[in-house]
Amino acid sequence: MICRDSRYNEGMETYTARLERSGRILIPAAVRRKLGLSEGSQVIVKVEDSGTLAVTSRSQSLAHVRAEIRKYIPAGVDLVGDLIRERQAEVAREDAEASRS
View 1 (cartoon, one colour):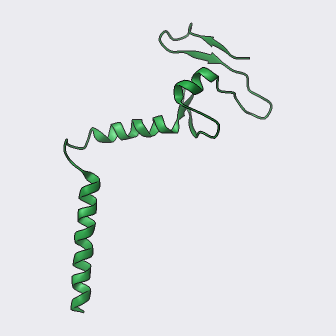
View 2 (cartoon, one colour):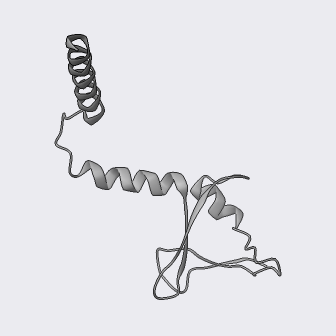
View 3 (tube, one colour):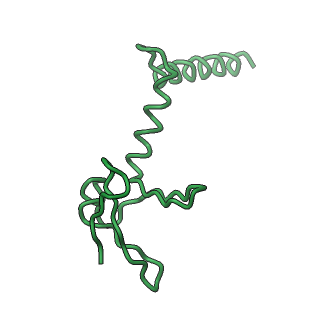
C-alpha cells in the first residue's frame, strides 16, 4: 500500500511504502518516473544521521557531483584536453629519452 502524503513538508512529496519480508521497498511509480528509473536502474541509498532514508538515481547523483566540481573550474578551461596534451608531451619526452639510450 502506497499513498502520497504532503502534510510533512510542503513543497516536498512524501510517500508511504511497506517493507516486504524480503527487505524490499517498492518505489512508487510517480517517484520512478520523476527520477527516470526503470527496471535495473542503479540508485544511491543514503541513511542520514537523523534516520532519514534518501533514494537518488545514480545519474542525478553524478550530475550533482559534476555541478559541484564545475564550480572550481574556470570558464573556458578544458581539463580533458589539458590532460591529453600533458600526456602526449610526456610520451614525446619518454620517446626522446628512449631513442638516446
